Image 1: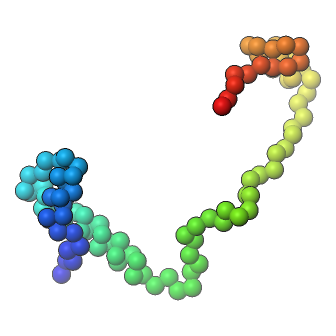
Image 2: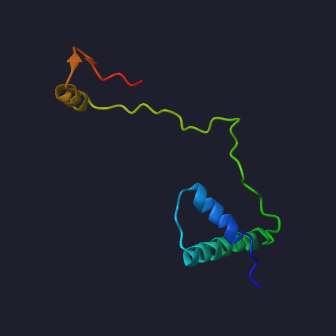
Image 3: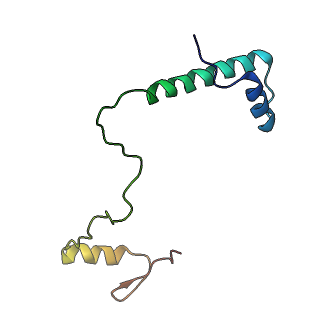
Length: 99
């Protein structure tokens, strides 16, 4: 037997709050679809995972960023970049401010 988690009256209230006009057959269809989805979630939550480790959060106490690496470029590549850069003053390249 199919379990009704959400009633048609609740769907009507939600539709009213969202200012969505649903016909009677649409209300029944939406109610059935939402109940199907919620029943599926309910069945998933009852699956025995044994000793599986739960990952419901990230460890935010440590920084997991990759180290910056400086890669050397040949003088020829550096000169091409400088030549093609739109704004520059001697060896300094101007960029727009990023705030």
